[in-house]
Amino acid sequence: MQFKPSWDLSFAAGAFLGDGSFVEDSDYHHHVKLAVRDYDFAKAFNDSVAIILGRRPNVVLVTSNKGKTFYESKYSCRPLGLFLERPLKQLLPDVSNYPAGFLRGLFSADGSAGVWVWNKRLEIRPELGNSDLELLTAVGSILHTSFQINSNIYLARRKGASWKNGYKTVILRKNAYQLR
Image (cartoon, rainbow, N blue to C red; front, side):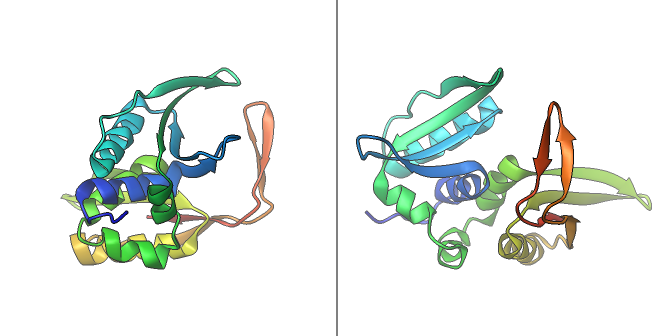
């Protein structure tokens, strides 16, 4: 199955890199899956995947885990899962024609963007957190070349750092980086 570059494919790739997964169930069916806390994001991913596959949109499922509500989009499509799971260097050429779609998907999953007034002018400030330095470097390059937005990457927390998150302690297994 061939996938044509499109805004929807770029958005789905960005969202998948941030919060997606490619899973196999007990019956050996393969699913492209996104489970998030934001209904609108899950719906946007769901609609984009439906357009990519030429299908009607699936129902966004509502699930609960430890008292938290999640919205889940799931499609059975092994070729799309294999496409989205490719290494970043292979994926970037397919999404480079629609950088806004790719960034929107990724920032919806792992980041934010804001506008501030600084020295009497508007400043756009994207923020994206991830442990994949190669991904953040590529995003910084896309921001600069496609949108003339400068950014830097910082080490936010070192591997092994810990902090309290509600009732549980979180310990990082990898370095965490921040693009700003």
